[in-house]
Image (cartoon, rainbow, N blue to C red; front, side, top):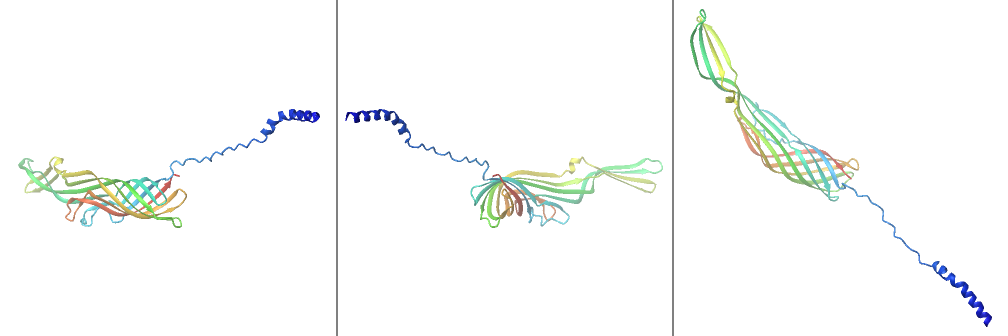
Amino acid sequence: MKLISRIASALFAILLPLTPALAADYDPPIYVDQAPDYKPVEVGSGWYLRGDVGYAFNKPYDFSQTPSGVVTDISALSGSVGMGYHFNDYLRGELNVGLLPTSKFDNQFVTTCPGNQTTTVTDNLSGNVISQVTGPSTRACDGSDYTRNKAYDVMASAYVDLGTYVGFTPYLGGGLGVAYSTYKLAQGAKNCQPDTVSTVGGGSTTTTSFTCYNSSVYNGTVTSEKQFSLAYMLGAGFAYQVTQNVAIDLGYQYVSLPSAKFATIDSTGTPSIHKGIDYHQVKVGLRYDLW
């Protein structure tokens, strides 16, 4: 028994230092969570830029009663630039700044100009003045009236995209904004020209001279106004996706400036001021997505 006890004690003394090492071999594994993948932030995602050119096919300034002698120059073209944002696949908003159609009306006519007339009778043999009379008179001269109209707007719009079909996305929309318009009306301007006529008879020469007054007498009257007014728009159209970032936009718009004033020339040839500008137009443009 003593021999067995001594052997057991010796084995215990040998194995005791190895116990921590064996225990270390059975420590539970350590798990480290993997860091999430890095995703760059898309600056400008959802935003887009746009530019458009429009044509007002019903002409925004009424000239249907303008006499045939009046020269009209109505630009039916419009243009705008702006930016928009896709709130989701169906709703987007835009802010655009635009130049609206412009117009010019010019009317030339014959009227009378007041001035001074001097009639001098001269003896042909001696060259002496026989008589001379000076007094007010009138002469036929050219007159003119004209009007000028311009307008600009800032429009905030909202559109509903109705889904995409083989690259085409139809939409409906409307907008509300502020218009800045100007008109100028010049009426009764006259172009006075001096005139001298001589006639010979009975041994004397009669000379009639017409001189104009100061030029300010013939300027006529000028009326002009600048104003801000409400503007709104209703529209529909479709966009076609050319590339991932570029789309062509073709649409129709009804644009109205209910309280904006403009000047024209009416059926009697008289310049007049009207209220309310509205027109129908087609627009074509490009959209560029910033993502």
